[in-house]
Image 1 (cartoon, rainbow, N blue to C red):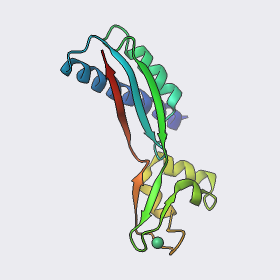
Image 2 (cartoon, protein in one colour):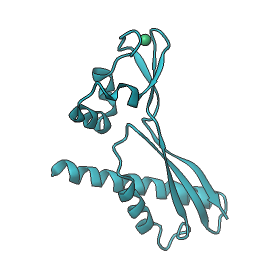
Image 3 (cartoon, protein in one colour):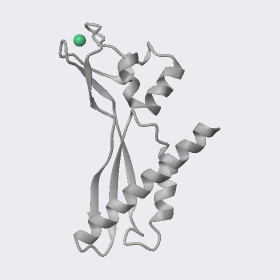
Length: 142
Ligand SMILES: [Zn+2]
């Protein structure tokens, strides 16, 4: 239960960060209002999109983002082996993982190195190419 509460807090904090950035961007660009906002959520982030969406729609009220429409895109987690250069996606290696471990990975992206290895050469020396961040891809100002 504690974990669930913590996760919800996380989503609200995230929404607060997004709405703050959007409003700041709008002000800097002398916008009358904000249109479409595209938010990219990395697959390694354990974010419940519905909660973020709800929070954003609450927070935008009576701001220049009042009429903003928030759209979400998911970015696949992708890895690249530093030893042999092979690139692969999280779903390619998920078969080898139990559900508990998958949840751990989503909760703490840093642990991927303990659970994953290069499917080609077996090395654990790999980098996370994409899917670990959350960012705003597009803000439409009017
Ligand atoms: Zn490799």
